[in-house]
Structure formats: C-alpha cells, structure tokens
Amino acid sequence: MGLLSDYLEWVRSQYGAYGEAIAEQELGVGSDVGAITKKLDEELGHPAQGFADWSIDVTGQIGLLSLDFIRGLGGAVVDGVDSAFDAIRDKLRGKEPDVVAGITVGALSILCGVYLWFSVKNSRDAL
Image (tube, rainbow, N blue to C red; front, top):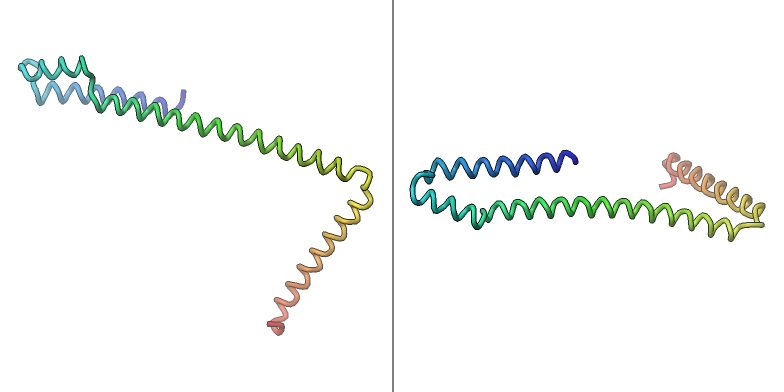
C-alpha cells in the first residue's frame, strides 16, 4: 500500500519477535512459570499488542478520513467557484460596456492611490 502500512507491518513483526525473545530468555520456556505464561499469552493475547493493533487502525482511519476531507474540499471549492462565475455572468449579461468601464475606473483609482501613497511616503516631509 505505502510507506506507512509497510512500516506498521514491520513494527508488528518486530514486536512479536521481541516478545517471544523476552519470554524465552527471562522466564525460561522449559520452566513451569514460562509454560504458564506462554499458555496465558496464547489464550488471552498480549494487552500491548491489542493496543498496538488498535492504535495502528486508528492512525490508518485518521489518514483515510483526512484524505477524504481534502478530496471533498477540493470538489466543493471547484463547485463554488463555478457557481460564483455563473451567477456573476448572469448578473452582468447585457451590461458589458458598463462592466468594462467600471473595471477601468477601479483599476485607475487603485493605481492613483498607490502612486500617491508612495509619493507621500518617499517625499519624507509629509510625516
């Protein structure tokens, strides 16, 4: 699947190997305590392994949900922009000369304002 799933699978395999090595070394598989512990571990399972499996599942689900959220958000943004364009086009249809004049006046006003701002700012005697 991907890097995360490969890593999580590796963690699971290493955890199992580590647990087996600890049980054999510290408790002694041949002793009574080792046999009882091994039998309980086989029947009940290790609590930490259950938690590890649960946390891996939760992490995977969070990743899938965030990916679904991003996919849905992208689609919603595209639909919103398309709807806004359609609404503006319908509202301004038939008034093209007025729209061009309005955009020209707005652009010239912004340019004049910026020019005046920087002229006053660079003159150093205004402030």
